[in-house]
Length: 90
Image 1 (cartoon, rainbow, N blue to C red):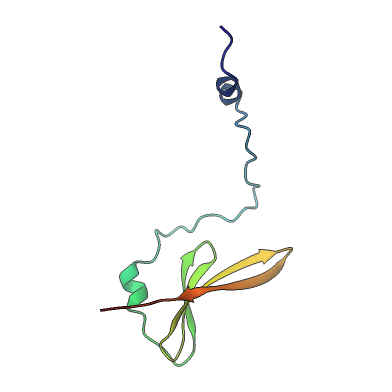
Image 2 (image 1 turned 135 degrees about the vertical axis):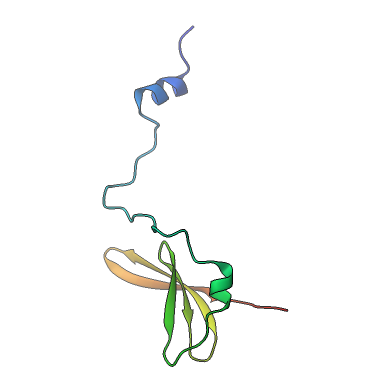
């Protein structure tokens, strides 16, 4: 019986998917920022950022608002996307 085509590709090292280029962004070395640390962030005189990883960060404003932002590049141009704000209840 001939081998399954999926087995043949897997055995040949060709999974059918392209691999990420060598210059792709490396994963963040730290495990991430805890939920408690993000919620406990206090406002300062100037806005500041708490990086989470993969371009995602929390921006803490002097007014106390906390905004999720995502920084990315398209064609070498840096862009920011406002994801939303943190809602803290109770």
